[in-house]
Length: 237
Image 1 (cartoon, rainbow, N blue to C red):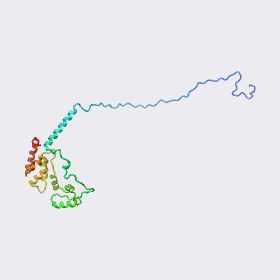
Image 2: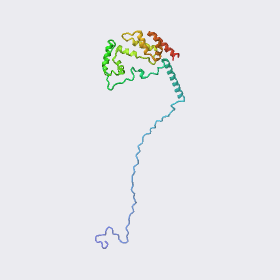
Image 3: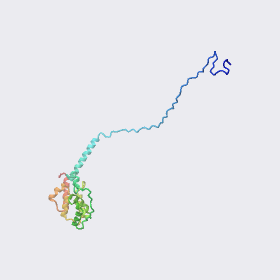
């Protein structure tokens, strides 16, 4: 044992003439592990490709012009067949009483329907009493009077306000009107029938018949058919 160290050499004792040796260790650097990215893939679906085509052919405008000319010609022919008032009817002309004013909170009373086989004066009295709160409103009274009729009485009211349809010939209209008039009880006299029928005609026929209107219904129908034929042939406008 070296002198001066009775209990042994200390752990860091280096004898003279000796130098400590150190083992060199390779330097290490920290390593960061980066996982590879996860990529989800899907099968590719190609979008639908629409191939556009011209919507208008080279002659589309010519066809439209031709159709418009045909429509105007057809409208002209219809107007010639039916007279000047074919396309001149307004809603006011089709209403029994136009521009009716209804009072606020007005409620139509229940009427006892008049069928035409009882006293008409009694029905008028009943109607006036039911509508006593509206005696100053003549338009309203006239407008709702048809709601108090039924059966033959209602048909009487209807055939007085009938009119010829757009595509209906004069003969067809006269037959339709005559069939409804035949349901009226008591039957109408011939002169009364022709007077009522005349008032249902268009302004074109009315103006040409009023001065020499026949008293026979069949003769009046023949006269109307001759007028219609004259318009069709262009002799009357």
